[in-house]
Length: 255
Length: 240
Image (cartoon, rainbow over all chains, first blue to last red; front, side, top):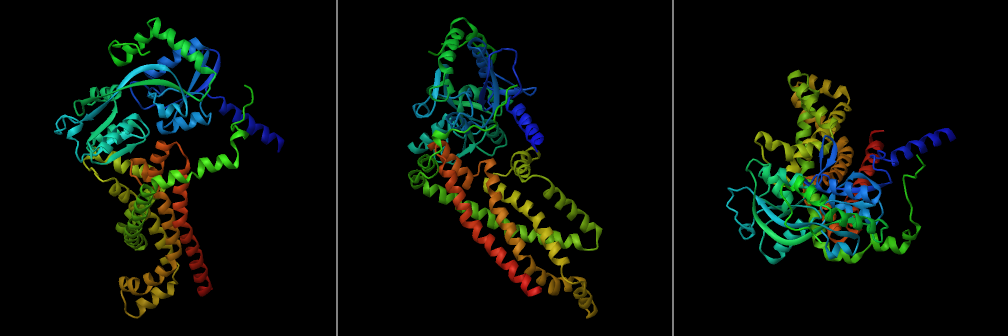
């Protein structure tokens, strides 16, 4: 009986330890991310890649920790941080006052806006043309919040359909099951570029959002992350990562 | 590697007061009650329609399967195997996200869910009917045939009506499964009970909507479970 219990405990410990260090040294830090959000976080050959991943790996290198990525649904991240299931989250998450009541953020690392994505030939030229159209959003995102604000104002009257991942929403748009998507500009731009002309950015919806690295309240890691982030913005690494994934130089570096 | 417990426990948050605040926040429910109620009606409507259509399709499949014609029984068997042998989640995702690839586009989420649940429950209902029909004494078929009825007439007037009574308890249990399975349709975005609870949870950061959804499911499933148990007992007494 004891042997069995010991074997079980050993197995659990091995599972709990995760995949081991990635050669960066330092402590392992559990990082939550909705890894279906190109170009910020997505999978290539089974590994997480993207703007956020490069950025956080660089932060970890300088702050002395090794990120262990956990692929989760976006709407579960805040709750998971609050319950200390994750140490850090990087998932193109906009810093909002509402979210700041529940979790902490690093200094901003990306300037973002919302956008309206739709087929170019659907006769939709702006948000005002949406009328009764079905609008897809990802659950829990600022895209969802923006869409619901439009609905409250009466600018749009149709159904707002929530998806677990933005990939599901893109898929539904491509299939013609929804009429448009309200989502982060950079991600919808990436989709538009890869959609063979099926979807276009119809309108940029300026919201002046900024992404931040999310942390549980009063995390010891916050100061280290901010210092590393400041260095990365300062020494040109930020611009390098930006060019690699966004395809052009940043207009300005978020402060 | 040092030993790490796979579960962490924070005693400071494990108090009656916190449990009440996190799980039983009545304010959140009052503010969103209409939304939840509407979602509940979608859940019940979806389950009811899928059950009715599933019974019709399931009975057809059962009769095909027990007949002597291979041309009928083989496809029925394949159908039942495929739908019982694959997860409902795959069936739903396939029906909504993958059929457009071959030109079949389901516009309505409700209809997509209804199709998936009907096709799935029909496979289970078919098995229930098959075992119900086969549980009727062979002598009845022989007697029917001996008195000049055809196979189809004996089935229709003698066997199936008796089988129907016997399958009511397992069909009720199947209906309970179906009600709970409607929650899987939330994956394609239909705002049934679970999705609606998750949308409110994401907006309010409260776990209370999930508890409320669970209570709604219980409110409809528990009476049905006890009803099925009672019917089963009565049936056993009568046939014992």
